Image 1 (cartoon, rainbow over the protein chains, first blue to last red):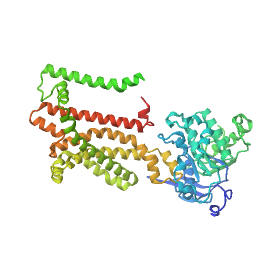
Image 2: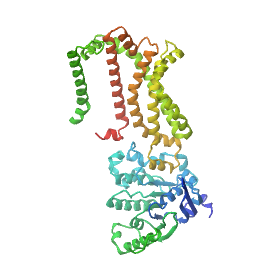
Image 3: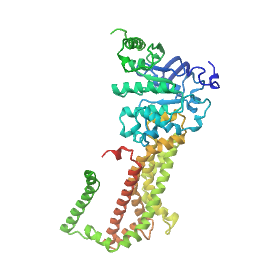
Image 4: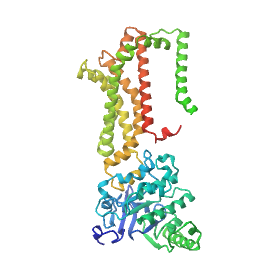
Length: 278
Length: 258
């Protein structure tokens, strides 16, 4: 565990390193353990999915990494920085569960929103290595070229979530944090969004930490799937997905995909404390 | 489009006309004394007869008082609410004061204001109007500034947006529909405040004063003409606010639906 990454060039050291992470919430009936000692490292430009039963603390973990929540114990480093410092240096692109667009701003204004905020941070400790994303190109890339000047209210839920993705990628932030961003979408839209995410990710080569409770989604997207147990969450398994890239829509019909899904689902069942065979 | 125009203009005018026709008919049939309840046609004729008296000499002071009361309440309300959302202490400290202002019979303070500022001052009327409006503005601004979307807030925080940036980009725009709702209420309240202030604050001009004098001296035309003029001003101001709202809140569901 070293802090040297802060001074080093992009590409040195892991994107995210988590050691001995413990988190407990104070409640009226005493503290509740949410995270019970996690150790994870995420490589730069890696796409890692956090998978676990509902309420296991996946989102809590994401919020701790993003510096939105102070952990009770343990250390987290993002490009060698503490989460709060990484946040100040604009290292994160957050995609929350809801699109969270500002309804009074057009699609273009929403996509460029985070570039306008906290300008001092953009020239922070370590210049993020991603290419400077042009807002218009991004809007085109997510298929909303004709809607650049539309207000969010004119868009469907799926389109709004595309804007939310574009907003996160409009930042040069090297780490994207995604909290079940596609969970409210219908299946077809969801699979479109997964492909879109993979395309943006391949283009920008950023690290992605993606929370989901869907096994097929995790397998389809991830380099590695981190399976968390029920609360208090521990790391049950880290599953490396052995599917090549680029991945396309047909992949989900393949035997290899089905095999990966079975493996991860079995791991999740054990992690959730359920019996393996029905 | 035609349906829209019908709803926008024809329906309200119909409602108003119906009220006047029923009123006119009742007064004629029941033969009510003009000072108690005059015919609307009589009142409108009075105003047309002496437009300068109603729409200028007496309207201007009242509108000025109401406007300053409205503006002062807005400024105090938005400042207080801004401090409240940023500090739990200020929030807890402000609540009893707000309740106090809300429950105090403000009308009763008018003579006190008169004692503070004297007959020549407009401050008694302005302050009564302010006190009427400050609670709606404060509470609406507070709710609007506070009830922001959690995910939007976290997106801004994830890039370390400052409090001021969160305020400017998220809180304030989110509070605008709430402020407009308060403004609609406060148009009426500020006019009532100014009139009541004139009743008790020793005014020598203004519509409140004209109403007061009119009833005392049994000038039905003057009293009721002033009341109608007040209503007219209220409708005009509300219309103005609706127009501004339509320009600024194109994004809001209240403007999109229906």
